[in-house]
Image 1 (cartoon, rainbow, N blue to C red):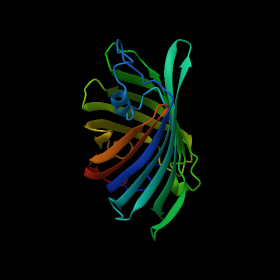
Image 2: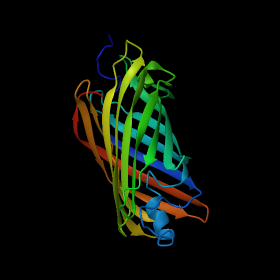
Image 3: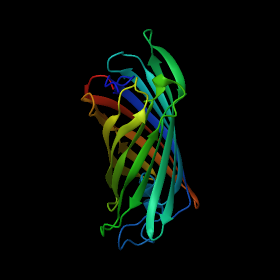
Length: 263
């Protein structure tokens, strides 16, 4: 029987998300009846934040947590993320893999440890819903216990699903979400089971000339111990399109407006 003690780290109370993305090749993923010639640079700016866009993408995200809920210590996560579209028969898919480098306070004296975290990957089947200028995907996800230190990961093998939607039919606004759930099925009996749901709203407002406002805080709920975190953020980004590549840089301060317990 596995224990159900809380996870090893607290929930974030204040945080700053910063990152850069390189998107290579492609013509954006269009919804039904959309015209590939309708967008140009404006469409590239909207598609740069589409998690299901038909780009091969490499992202680096820095997530600095200024204060954790219970320990009041700081923490940091540097996440490397790779996404690539592929086909299976007549179906279109997108694969995304994320590997973090975590720095968390651990032990009785809350000394910081740094190392690799758990590898997460999902494959989303891109479904044509018939709605113009909307991307929609659904598929499986898996998390592998690749952490170099037990305190930096879950020590569990987990699997679940993801569902994501992104609508880019308006000139100024783009909206969407990424919904996920996963639960552990094997792993270290001394570590807590994983039973985690998250939803990440996507809110983007185009300011012009590649600049945009953003809010993409990830809300999380742990079904094992009823802990949760609800962050909100407001950030600024800049899209730099070139003929073959699109660069996207951003920063987004976030604050938790509701939380319960340590994560």
